[in-house]
Amino acid sequence: MAKSSTVVGAVVAILIIGAIASIGYYQFAIAPGQNSTTTTSTTSAVTCTPSTCAYVNITNGAGTCGPVGPCGYAPLSVTLVIGVNNTAVWKNLDPGSIHTVTETTGVGPSSGDMHENGAYQYTYATAGTFDYKCIYHAWMRGTVTVKSP
Image (tube, rainbow, N blue to C red; front, top):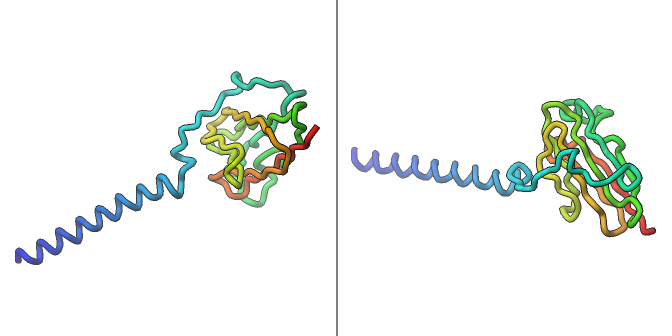
């Protein structure tokens, strides 16, 4: 009887260790945006005007409409010019839904979680085309095109 209880104890210990390892892996490898320490600014902290920035709204219902849209980022694409209006500002107008602005290659904007009425501002320094997405809603995608002056 002692041998079987030792085996059961070892199996339980292995299962517990496996569960802890799985949770840790999910938290830091699969869902890193959910653990982001990046803070998002509120609209009062946005430091640009419509003539120096492009504004993109995250529309009401963006988190629930799915790929059938139209919803998500509005407009879907913006064009900026370095030194003129090379800053984009995203605002979450979707009540009760958390969204992100995450550049698809990982080198551009990464807002972290934006709650309702949260805003995020990013200034582009190089020309190019930059695709971004919401890490929580796969159908939410947009594009920023940045041109040289």
